[in-house]
Length: 420
Image (cartoon, rainbow, N blue to C red; front, side):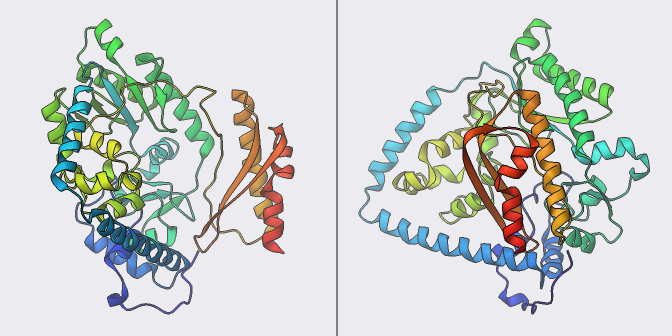
């Protein structure tokens, strides 16, 4: 997609939040420069006049209006509140939550390093040491050499090229990634047969039993596991070790005591907490919460706006308390199964339909392998304006074949409607 011919805005018209939004959701990825001010400026300049810019500007405006309503709601909610009484109630809840802390389990979060890019290097060693991105229209990942320029996942290809003119773009090879993912997960299962995959390139493991049985410290056990992954796949993996399923940044072990955990969480950006995305980050920032330590400072506001922000969840976040139960998703717990593709903009109707057939075929393969069927088929698609739409249809029978998924679902009908 090339930038359009929309009139460019003067820099004074850009808000700080829009510039940050244009930078994308992966601005905290490993390998990126700590100070991304200049990178974000280049992204904003390169985006002007594009459909991507217009869409992000619209979303930023909508979120800003939502935040203004929340601020008004906050002011109204705080009127007449007995602050000391609310603080005392919240502090009592903190004591109760602290009493529930369990430090007996060793939980590891493992995350493959630049997984798609690393797999591509195995098949094309000539890419070694060069800045390259995986994906065409929108990048699914970038090599560490490319990240030095600010290139990262979720970024439109034309923006990535502005940041790094020598960037090499390679197509996604999902069959390769699936094959390597299976090999990596098999290594993880040796250390925890009940490990919980959290995607194709990351997982949670409870290595307590394995460590005890083999007389290993947590650190030694994880080092052994990482060496096994590299020996069998030539891929590297980072790991965070903690008493629960909070996600530390990179390779790190949190000491297993309450004081150390709370100290670690105190200065941690709220954006680093699993489940808090860009939208919730801005909503929390609107009431003064930028770090996990700020949660305690603003505990009265959170309490009176409990339904809006979730008091218990945020207090547990502040304390660094999370679930330490690791187990694979049970069949009865699974709500959906899906397949998706990222590709350059397609303007030809037949090519779009062909792409949908490929996705339907892949979904049938996954469903057949795991014995799944479903009654509701949902299509999520993104236009070249970067606007995302969702369409769904529920049937009175279960479907699972590619023909049913394609012909009876909203897929073909939606494309037909769009082109008419």
